Image (cartoon, rainbow, N blue to C red):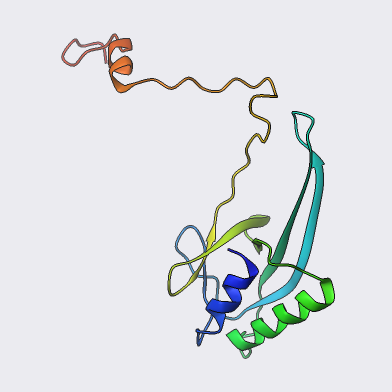
Length: 154
C-alpha cells in the first residue's frame, strides 16, 4: 500500500485497527511511534546496484489505555512527515514487536489494515548461480512414486 492510499482510507474511517497475519488485532491502544523514510542502497548477488525507498511506520503496543490514535491524527502525522522528511508516495512497511521487531507489508480489507508477511527473494535470477527448482507435473510425481496403494510399502 502506498502513502496516498492509506491517507485516503484514513479519511473515511472513524477508528483504526491493524490485524496481524495470524488474525489477531494489534491492541487498540497502540501508538505510531515513528514514521520515516528508509533508503536501502545495496548490490544484489548478480552485481546490480539497487536502491529501494519505503515509508516506515512503527507500531508500539503502549500501556496507555486512555489515548487512542484517531484517523485524523494519523493523517496529520503523515502530512507532517511528508513535508519535513520530503517523503514521496512510497510503499509502506510496518514494524511491530513480535518475538523481535517484525516487518510487514500493508493492505486493507475494508475494515482493518492488514499486516502482511514479507518474503526474501533472489533479485538476480538468471545472473546468480542458484538453480531454480524444476517443476514437475502431477502425473510425473505419481509415476515417480514406487509405493502404490495396497502394496503394503507405506
